Amino acid sequence: MRKCVSDAGHVCYLCEENCPTGAIELIDGEVVLDNDKCIRCIECTHHCPVGALKRIDIE
Image (cartoon, rainbow, N blue to C red; front, side):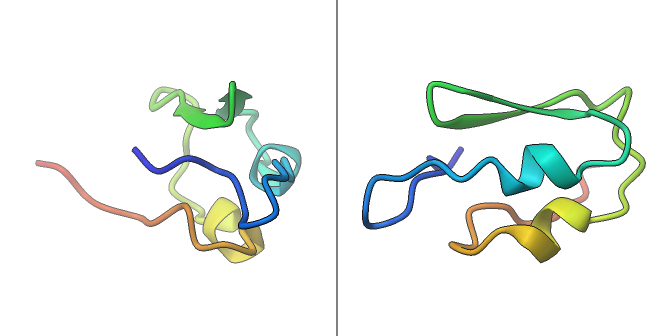
């Protein structure tokens, strides 16, 4: 899991703030995703300025 920290060491919380279902929580700079709440809309990846989030499908 990538740390959600830019080069300046700033955690921005944009993914958490823009998640329509509240599936994302940032804990100590790490993204914690609740898969039961996530609707795979990828709003989090659209708002991440450092590319810390990527969509992957696990079967």
